[in-house]
Image (cartoon, rainbow, N blue to C red; front, side, top):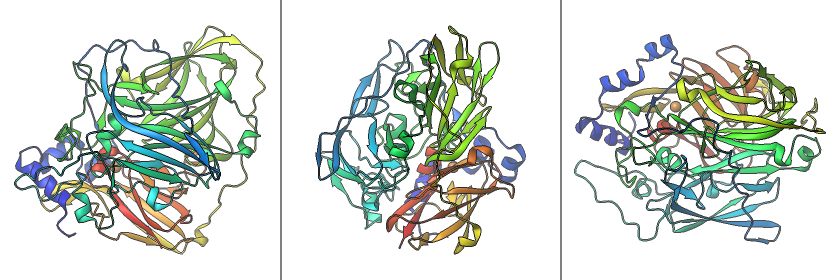
Length: 540
Ligand SMILES: [Cu+2]
């Protein structure tokens, strides 16, 4: 048994309040492990229903997040400033919705960066709670990687009053008392990113201990693109024919506010969600770049779609469907960590929370005036639609998708590995409550879980009960196998998040290089992450 963890107490507290309980969790999530494996649930999580009329699909124009201008340049590094603040947005037409934002928009502003050119982003926290910024997919020194207890406290933040029976308050600033290594900042923090890594689409989001899921849900997510000259020389679709698409589901209250089943809607002290949502929160509105089921007018030409699933728990299987029922190929050119060696053609593409896929779609096959819907095969009713493209005009297209996209992908072999580790990702018992556990343990910042040598190659074998999209900080990895079989077509390339499916065992291989320090690996179902499904990764 691990030491008495505050999170165990948290679950116990919920039970004491009559909100939790073993039978409830089992019933809500089908989490008798054997039952989960037998049923192979198509999704993990429960859907919140919006309490107001939803707009028809394909009416709202697709927004493109603004590119953030640097506030200055010094010694070859660009400086950026982002203020985290609450604001009111119009997400649904004619409806005002309060959101927590990076710089007043959702998604936050896009940072366009260049491989090997460092940037520093100064974040100022004007929100009512502590925050932490993590650049997902960034190869970042530990001090700027956004460890969940490295809180940026808002001005005037005081520790919440302890409730009777409340032994710790994770994430409320008390977390650092349990974690002597936490580095707290007041109001602002500089995050420095060397960006010595492959060109790709990254995203930055909140990573606060115990409260990541509701913070992202409220709007704390933005894109960061890393470019390099090799990619530029390929002749891929670019400019207005390169579209970042951040897909995220949400739900709304009757008043137009974002609905989320938080136990403590202030997100100040008590973490967790209402029991039916312990396996993950799904919304019934699909947003792309912050707009519901948007539409985008395109030329009859190739487009590069840079897809990110920024949903807390929802999985998608995307396909591009013409009104006459034909499908357009999704030509995958890149994965989480940049370009593939060569393109991989998909009819549909699974995308788990936090994964990115870089895809070229050729609208030249669509008649002018025609429409292409991006559909989620895993959705039903309104959640089946994602967005649409309307082909407006015939054009000349000089873009290309070369047969060779990159030659710098690492090719680690099993024989290179100095160690093979095994981890289970499962619901489990902790004390007299339930949580989401890695290797049977709930996250504890003070515990040492995995220690790797800088430069070591390792194979990790990870086994799941239900869906768990597993993310490693610091490094990219290759997928070696799925339940003893070869990886799937969409596992190609260098990844930083891999979708473990119910009952599956996935092997990955990576080299732990870059920086020494304290990092994390965790499930990127954001609700699982907040309910202890994280572990420490120490690079020495
Ligand atoms: Cu999970």
